[in-house]
Length: 251
Length: 224
Image (cartoon, rainbow over all chains, first blue to last red; front, top):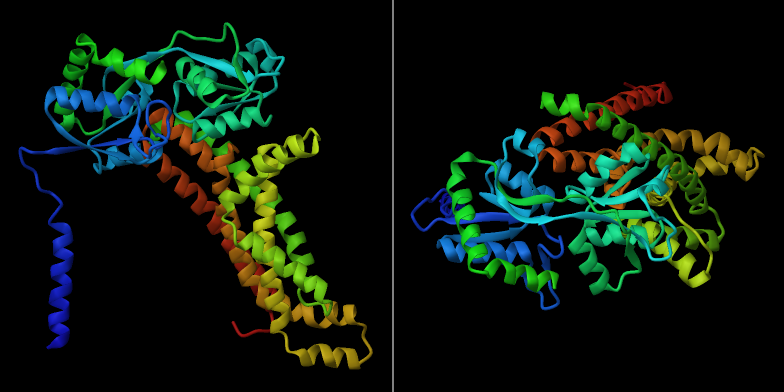
């Protein structure tokens, strides 16, 4: 008898855990996945707050469109998997809008940020152009426009790439001399060098034409979310809120 | 999935080659370290035993990801800034060192346990027959010890082969690092990880089969 009661209690406990799942009503809370550190798009500041351009833009758009959301900082790879598996409804993680990604079933919003990419080298480096990179290895961050830019150049100039998971490690690999150069968004690179007082310099004339970052969903049933994002984005650009956010992080 | 295989298949196979290269180099040096420290741990000399114990405690007490960062960034930093000697480690060198240290520490413990599992009477009998210490070790103790060690050593080899994935964090283009790049490019994580999982599975299953055959040959006199 005691055993039976115990089993029933255990089952009741398990059921309690699952009651949270699957409820769907008008007060839907969208789950948005993001990266852990992609400064200044998302990062944890000195006060322990999770902040960044993506975080603020999403908050401004949600306020404008009146939807509720929960932001989960999962990391780049996990954010992708979360959207594909339905654990999250969408992701905002400085993801570039590319044809290759659309071909695998992703749906992107309008671009919410456009930046050029550039190359930086150690402050005392003699590298002055892409030609000087022949036979050398360059550090890039997985999944960024900077990596895409470097990939587009590597065959032409004959250099190799080493992929890192986050920007601090990538910068460290150049500062420490393990690799000769790194590629990153120009405003981010400039801000990082200035804020972190890094012994790096941006190589003149290394900029490209730039690309767009978009909010992304995988399940087309969440199209509503992308529509709201696009509308909200247009509104915050019109009312000046967007420029305010960019100015706050990029100075 | 077919799409990913046609576009990135070659890249992933190359990455698998890099994984195997790193694992082989790491295991080679790990064996050397393991044998040296393993034998040190069974010697009479207290100094040798203490050195082995400290080595094992340090390496076993630090996660490999920390060890990898420390070797790749910390060691060259110390050389360049504290000693003033220009020194750069490639990701392959740093990765090999990290794997060798990590696996070497575990190997030395496996070897110690293997040697100690042989009854002391074997050594005593060999010595009383007039064989020297090293000759008794080599001719009498080791052949018995190795047979007990083999399954555990194979296990450690497989763990080390999989541990190469940890070195993706220092930018070494092994299988996991490359897979992350492909995931980022295509944003199709399931297909890519499924392909990578199958690649690891094939390699490790093959290794296990070879190991099993080796084990059978070495334990010819045991009941199957």
